[in-house]
Length: 438
Image (spheres, rainbow, N blue to C red):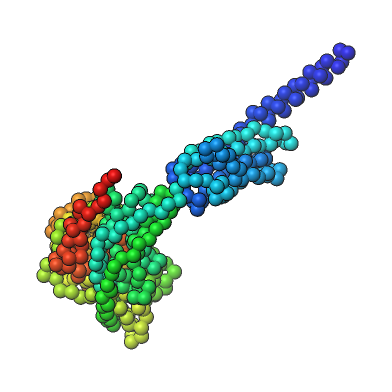
């Protein structure tokens, strides 16, 4: 009898150790995205589970609304499953619009024993009703390569709103209450039959609605130019960009890489800068043109590059090249905030000023910059001097205008009448047309 006691004690110790190990194991973790707020039956809900030790065993997801409890996901996991990600379909719950509760229970196991479980509840709101859009501006005359403005209202909070054109999106910005304003372009490289601008609004639950815009397209052709590349120019470009393209063996190859690959990278950067904008206009009136400057190249000009009589490249020049005196002072075209001041590839030493609503001006090839990112500037304030940095053949200013990163024709913004008729006048006319709060 005495020999049995130690054995029993040993068994109890082992059992206690096993139970302590099992029940001391952390319960599986649960992560739900999104985990709060408004959702629709089409909102992708993602569940993530992880067992720190052992494995996942059984999952049960139930929706509760009123006195109804409906299972929407039941699943058993194979032994050894430590992580899982599941998609949840709320349409199976037969929910009505309004608040509901999501109950998630996940159990674990360890070495064949049932382990600890985790239960979480989330309170959310089902919203399947798309927002309402009312377009307030009535006429939009858009020149190819130019800009337009639409003012509209949306009757609820949005997660995304603006103008969609083909596969491109241009954000709208809230002006107060339910009113939004959106600057949008007629991209120079978009065929007219694909240009159908529509206002879009997506609410917090993911419901989407679009509304048409009354618009009239004005076609415009763009010039071409043939540029002969000299060896001295190619050597200058090679010296500036050889570190970026060590695989290029000749000055001509470096030029082609910079004029093509680097140009595309820089253009993509403009879309990133375009999101760093004030939601309200910072500019006042007409935009200034650099004084006493002769234009060297216009907007959307197709340039054919020739070397020793052979075409070696073709690109579209976006912006205006303006030449004055060497190292001429460069004034800010209008008031705003500097969002970039530094080296920007083909543009060389470059300043970008935000004027609000996604509208920005670009000043390239500068020899000197007297501002930095974050600085507030006034119309006419000197921000630096012209130069020949980047892909410039000689001292000049490359002046560009972008709308949410899309380059547009600067000429419109130098025209006080155009700005009044197409931009600021519309903003003024629509003030007070917003629906009154109920």
